Amino acid sequence: KAGVTQTPRYLIKTRGQQVTLSCSPISGHRSVSWYQQTPGQGLQFLFEYFSETQRNKGNFPGRFSGRQFSNSRSEMNVSTLELGDSALYLCASSLVIGEQYFGPGTRLTVT
Amino acid sequence: AQTVTQSQPEMSVQEAETVTLSCTYDTSESNYYLFWYKQPPSRQMILVIRQEAYKQQNATENRFSVNFQKAAKSFSLKISDSQLGDTAMYFCAFMKITGANSKLTFGKGITLSVRP
Image 1 (tube, rainbow over the protein chains, first blue to last red):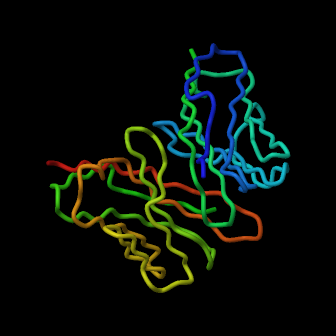
Image 2: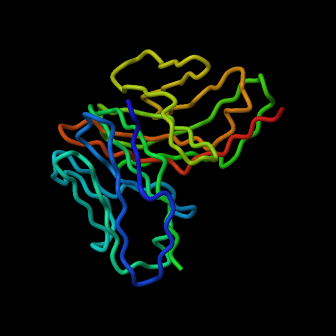
């Protein structure tokens, strides 16, 4: 079974732009979670989607948003990019509570 | 809110030896999961081991085992017969068990280096 895939793997954007990252979960998994990883703040939970509904949200500004499609694929969007948004964005999918499988991440650099 | 603390930023171990990574957590929940994840230089987050808080028996996975002390809120990872491929960052993580929640709370991580 294919693992979690994330596209693109690397991205360079300019301050003020917006960006969309994509995550395809493992087949059959309906829950997708997003995390931001930075050297300073570590790994922080962004949000979780289940059956196209956001059911949990972390403490991030409204510039960070997401959605999930009927095939469970998820996207996250960051608008008005800031230098501090430079990070590794990780997506994880799960079938049952207590199991999360991570994708390889998208490395976002904001210049 | 839950917190996870990994107080050692770095550790080093000789190949084939045993190393223990420490983790403490704070929560008012009685039912939860604890995890150790490994993140090698490729940045892929890999699940090493999982412990369910209601199970008293410590989880083991091949060379990896945990020492789960629920009253002390301690969850350490022991790696036996360390291998060069164990070189990575290791994160301790907490997940509370509710009806609809998959949020992981991570510690800051520890960088483990295995010396040949």
